[in-house]
Length: 202
Image (cartoon, rainbow, N blue to C red; front, side, top):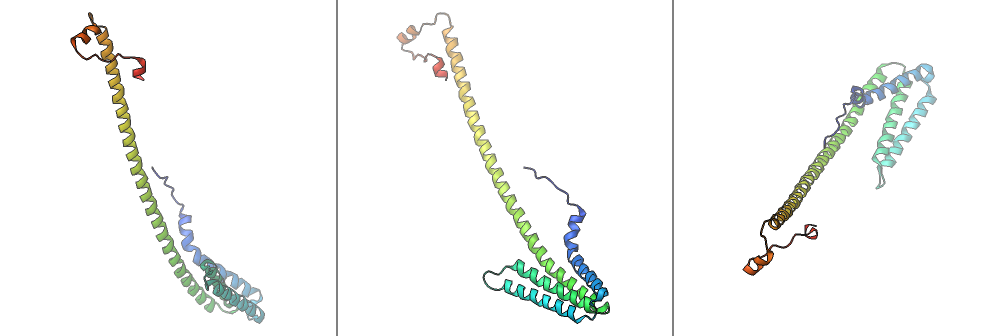
């Protein structure tokens, strides 16, 4: 039971590790483009981004409480709230110092959250591989036992066929001997071998 070995492309390995930095960098770039197009010191835009950020945070809070809380929805809502707040501040500010500081902070937080997910995913993947390996070993053991049992049955059947062939050969040889008389054997009190027929061979 050989598994097919698939070599992953280096982009497929790097992409998950670079996604937090790419996400925060994209938000920063879009916010600065928005800043250059009239968002700087725009009170209406700041109020809009604040309201959207608070609404996303409220949605995350609602999704994370109660028995029906969904951690995926809650995490997505909180991430959206943080991205909107980061975009609002970066778009409203007139310099690059505060946006860059917020970019560093959000990138560090994003990597912290992603590292926790990566550890959990790696733990689950290792547990799945271990479980799969144990099941494979168990099935391989059962296959070996069944193969040995089938081999033993074949050997028994082969031995029976060889015995039947030898018995048939002995009967034919006895019958072809000159002067062979079954009645004489019976009168002498010697046991007579059973006559060989096709029915007995089957």
